[in-house]
Length: 484
Image (cartoon, rainbow, N blue to C red; front, side, top):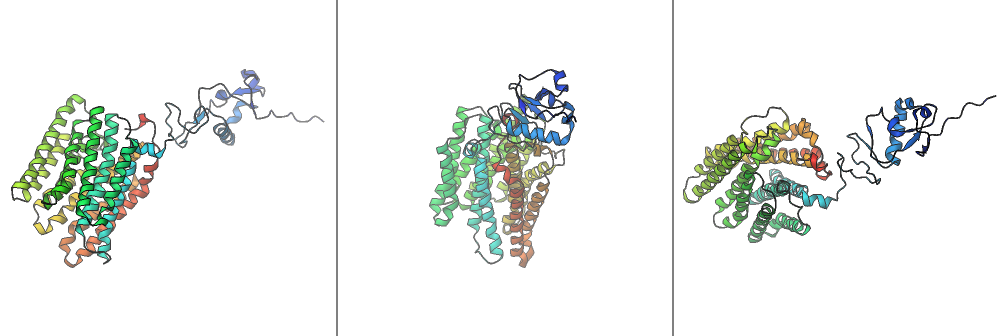
């Protein structure tokens, strides 16, 4: 009795085996490029041909065979990569898990190296920690678990939350736009130590030490940006408005010793408004996906933005110092910022109803709205109305700028072009928090309850943000060409 013909062994053989198409049809060896020609998700790298024995090429159409062969190739043969978005760490020709030159895969980079080139990975978490601590103070106060401490709330929110997130943003943006080398490790360590001492300084109960920490941190950031401007390419002119903003942040703690209101406004309004006026015409246009105008057309517009912002904001603080009209500086700052938005072309609502663009655009307009409303409000209600600017403007803008930065630099650029569902949740939560905080003084006996509700909504919004997008802070970036 004749035994059935033996099946050719499925092993990797030498290129010396039969390489013709006829021998393949008879059960010989075929090149893997021919065997996988019908599989679009397999791409061989440029190495020497590798051969696989197979009775017939058409057997590769079977799905189970496809899975077995793709597993065999990707796990045991260096030089092949899966051209699929699910393969995050492809193999290079040496067999290591790293991206080949020109591939669209992820790169294995030490975290400290990433932080040196993208400081937001370090300062965004510190800023969010400070913000959550500052808002939780009001929640504990509403439950009777903490005393009334306005200076601590101001310090943690304005200096910690806004200041540290702004430092991470500026450190990343200026390195990328000036195309300078990553921040040196001693410099980054110095920034980190100053930030940690800055956050822990309220425990010391010493105003002089706290003021020194604040001034030292922001003046050091000012000098670091100057060094980047001298040694690298020139960024767009509006970004240079960050420099007078940092000077305001560095001088505010010292001025506050003698002129408390002026020092407070220099940080809460001067520093932040200079920074937003400089970054919104550049970064805001990218977030809103506005068409890029040629440099010849944008240059006079950028120069007009710098002139308007410098003149208007500087004049507003001059009026606050020498003219006893508390409403005129607020009105002038609101008019100045609206003019900046109009000149930059940011007054038009976004075309795509995507939450990232919609909430960012709303945050731009809540800034002047809160300033103008505070100017028209009686003084006892003015601090609460200013939270339209602080929550609806600053906080909302920080979350959606941070979302853009950490998704693009974290290798998730595809989230920019599609609606990000959690953005609806934390965006609406922040708007609800703004409503409760602004309405609190008009509720009489329910003031404390509204204050606590606003704090809970603010904290919940940031927890949703960190749960949905915070993991991208640790994600390795894509290749340089895919990051913008």
